[in-house]
Image (cartoon, rainbow, N blue to C red; front, side, top):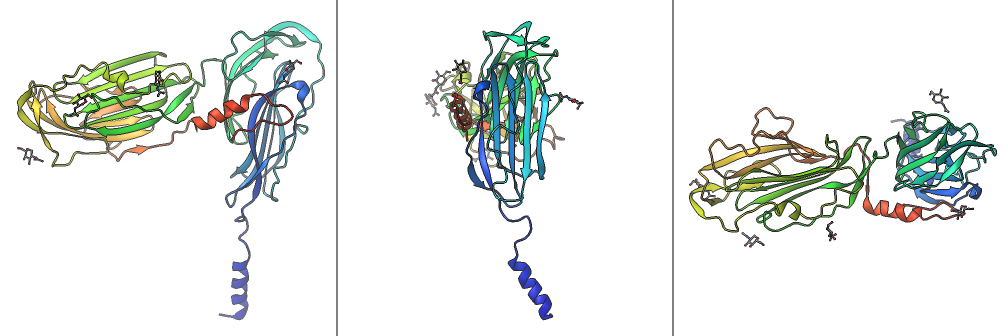
Length: 439
Ligand SMILES: *[C@@H]1O[C@H](CO)[C@@H](O)[C@H](O)[C@H]1NC(C)=O
Ligand SMILES: *[C@@H]1O[C@H](CO)[C@@H](O)[C@H](O)[C@H]1NC(C)=O
Ligand SMILES: *[C@@H]1O[C@H](CO)[C@@H](O)[C@H](O)[C@H]1NC(C)=O
Ligand SMILES: *[C@@H]1O[C@H](CO)[C@@H](O)[C@H](O)[C@H]1NC(C)=O
Ligand SMILES: *[C@@H]1O[C@H](CO)[C@@H](O)[C@H](O)[C@H]1NC(C)=O
């Protein structure tokens, strides 16, 4: 090896690889409603070291609505490519207006240096009052009963819509009422992303419901008698047209029982419905479910399996019969060949050995079941194809879709931890002179 090449190699290894150096970026996010007279606003950000290759981003969104303005700010690291600072007027007045600022940079530490609203917002010229009056409101809860205001001249319609903003540490559902110069709900003019924030808009105030979110698997020996308590830590902001759902499936095979409990968003013909169903048994193997679809935020908040257990009338000690069968419930696959044998209760005459394939709500699994049943031909699910959010199949051969190890997927719809959102709730308390933080 020539000495020149050796030097080049040594030199090369001493130089940082381009783009691999970690940047320091400003970090801050929050949203709050201010009086127009409080603007311009300025703020002080924290700092964060990004992963190598990441850039810094600034995103600011202002929604002006009569005397109020909603300010949404997100600063932090991003994988997006660099682009110049960009100001977009998504909607201009009279009445409601939406403007955003986005910037992605890598030219140096803390290059996402936007520190106030000045580059984005100038007070709109005082427009003469018109003859229309509309309710004016920004609310994370409900705009019911909001005060009406005189609209500026040129307004022709009252806006009544709901916005969903998720991403860049922002997680919010916002109901908006105000004056506008066009019908319908089109504040965003088709925009779906503003920097890291995914934005959605709907005219249906029932859309973008917030639901509890999570999956609990549990195996035990007495789950049909002893209630299990569960409180999930996660919530999800649903898509338009979705409602909250809760599906609790309980399987008992004598000495073994298991439950599968899923909460999240779902679609249902009936917006508000609930049902408990005993799919099979007793005597012998019991399969029972509780299914709820409901359309108001956080309505899927059952915290105990007693919601289902109170509908089961199981004798504590069923009279024993003559048959003995292996007993097993395995939520994570097949039962092994050496499950313990149990004495079957009277009224059963056959040993069941099969599977339920189950998919939905981010869960895919095969549940192996062995136990006592009444008839050789017993189907545990009676050919039911859906139990709440789960689509279910029993003992089907060509079921490659289902016949895989259990998996929990992170769905595409945005989720946040409850703690995160409780934090946002605190940040909602109005604070002037600087943006409220929520991290
Ligand atoms: C906005 O202005 C109104 C009237 O001037 C005042 O009552 C209210 O407290 C102000 N709100 C904030 C957040 O400053
Ligand atoms: C809305 O979008 C259309 C099509 O992209 C564009 O031509 C129009 O200028 C936009 N309107 C506003 C107010 O930004
Ligand atoms: C199951 O729980 C019930 C109620 O707590 C209790 O009476 C029963 O003895 C338990 N059975 C077993 C097998 O642990
Ligand atoms: C469980 O839910 C019930 C009914 O909504 C509620 O009264 C109870 O306080 C909850 N329990 C806990 C520990 O959160
Ligand atoms: C269960 O009973 C069957 C049939 O009598 C027997 O072959 C099997 O070994 C028993 N299993 C166990 C785990 O004892």
